[in-house]
Length: 321
Image 1 (cartoon, rainbow, N blue to C red):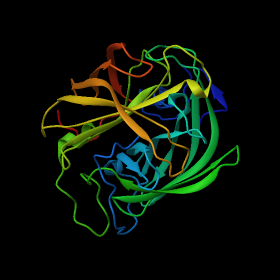
Image 2: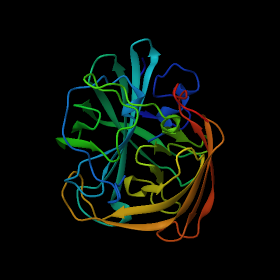
Image 3: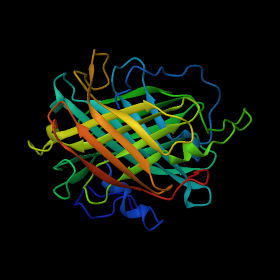
Image 4: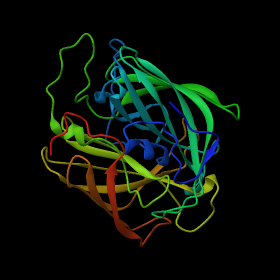
């Protein structure tokens, strides 16, 4: 598998995925956990990482307003070899406004029966909100994503700038489709199969990872993008979250958009999460959807539009539309 080189331009494949469509898309994708959800407790036993049920939103309850939304693609590369794509929503090392928000992505192959995977961490800069072109993605560190159970895990990171540590992770919402070795399989609900990484291919290195959770009857997503007008370095990154209760079985979902500021990288610093707009997510199938957004506050105030989303790799087998 060919992982990303040190830099790539907008249309270069860096994920090495071999499913055709997915191989061109994951690389171009780069959470604040709004306090409506608590982080799960009690570890059970290590689980098989090669399963789609681990897809979703994860966070460390001790660090306010930051976390990860990930997708696991079981057996994507071959039988017994899947793939993980993660988005990490956090902040600069010092607290500040929207220009101190930072997001990273990470990806790697995963092996059947393993509970963890070593990943490469990337940072994307140079983009423009809802626009094609201008982005550069570089490798900035390495990490290990590990799961103790269907609801607990950890992320160990080591950046080239010297930052290193381990973040304990818990699910933001309840387990839906994850199977632990010591537990009977949960009932499968096709709504959860709508979860995963999605992007509008007319934009560069931006997109979202979504969790549609029928057990919690909520949808949550992290949206990684850029400022519309402003700097093209790391201070031009922007990320938002969206969430809302939904009626299980619905395929047209109403969302509230939020922006979180004031945090510091992997630190327990009080953050401020405020509503900045509204959105709707309308699924046309298990592989396509429209995301209508309207910003009413923040530095994107007044901007509205539609992202025509495509799933980054193949749809899960349990997706039902």
